Length: 254
Ligand code: ARG
Image 1 (cartoon, rainbow, N blue to C red):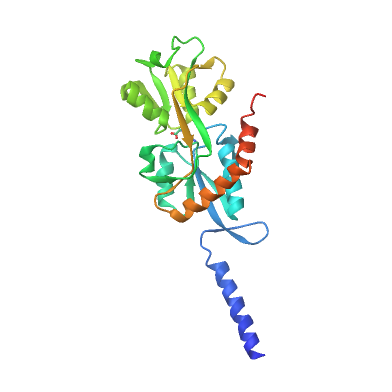
Image 2 (cartoon, rainbow, N blue to C red):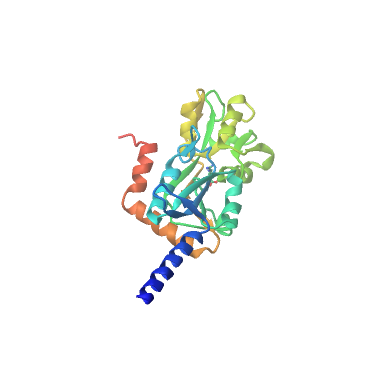
């Protein structure tokens, strides 16, 4: 009898310790604690991540939630400058970058990427009455980009830093264009479509600047987190969840 009591006591102590030693945990509605999984993003990028009131919604936010659910973790979304995502991911546990982020050889040197879950195209937004009709017409014009995005990198490479204005927010690039501070904005196609719809007098050039793959970024060398997220996103692609979320935000025409 004594032995059983001791065993029960040991078990209770053990459980208590598990609950207390969780560290990076969050209280959930049912009273249990889940490990926190942090999505780092820049929520100026509809339909991938943007604010609806004080809530961040969008394709990435919903896919991230599905990943966290799959992993039994508690999703927390941290909104930051696009330029800070990679360093945040590398400095924090259980954090990943998901921000319509393009896989590039350069970024691969500082973060690891999961399987790609979406395609992006760099597009050009101009004013409807602009004399810019093609990519070549951009030479010598003022181009607005979001700081450290691929749009920034390509524009700077192709047209020279002197002609490129870097904004912290994608939405500010568009504001710069409507105010006439820049003549064109180079940005990913899906947000470009949203911005053109939201702002009268803006149009998209009928030319793709570059094709890209979006993926989730994790701390360089964190094989365990990479494996978890990669398995989850691969399953969510395979079972149609990702396509369903994309369709909700970017309805196909037919
Ligand atoms: N795809 C581009 C890149 O990776 C732009 C992404 C910007 N994302 C954002 N959430 N603001 O550089």
